[in-house]
Length: 114
Length: 112
Image 1: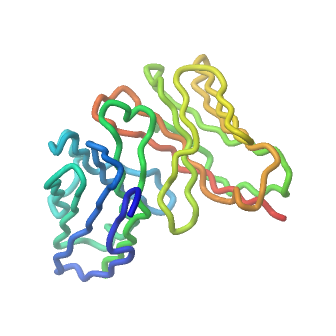
Image 2 (image 1 turned 90 degrees about the vertical axis):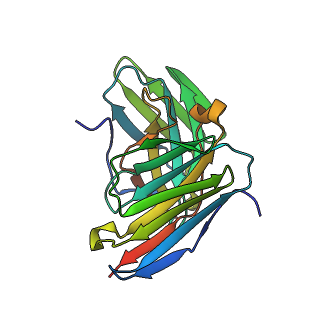
């Protein structure tokens, strides 16, 4: 596998469920990101991990909990979500030293909260 | 005021047309600018990035930055139906954490 892989591609969950989104990168990068993409809104940064340390938490509600066990894997744990959390969740990665040259996104997980 | 603004469109052009996509930004400290292309049901893919002012060309694509007016543009020559996608402009702003600030995206349709 190459690039950035996200699973699952689609997820439907009830407001009381607990689920996790997974992201894996095969690019040798050392920074990983979670973004939220809602209809008619710009991509919103949620979390940044640099060298496995969380360096940015963009005022995200505690019902979203990230985990970065190593530089290749990133998780987003979800619990007690709201319908307005339905969106496309995108993972991305980059090299810390060259992040200004842009980063590589996965295809996203389409989340629907019912 | 949003840090990066982009007209969401949609923009519809005939095949072969020259397409101009534009963004404005608010902070004069921004120096790195990117254009991403996003096809339906896919994640964004990096098309081009530029530093400071000037032009950068890659095949049919030209990225232009005018720092004096805080304006960034992407030109597509000889547009093809395969160029139909949403185009996102972005900047790293003044953060050192890798945070990218995105515009809303412009949806482009190139009709055969």
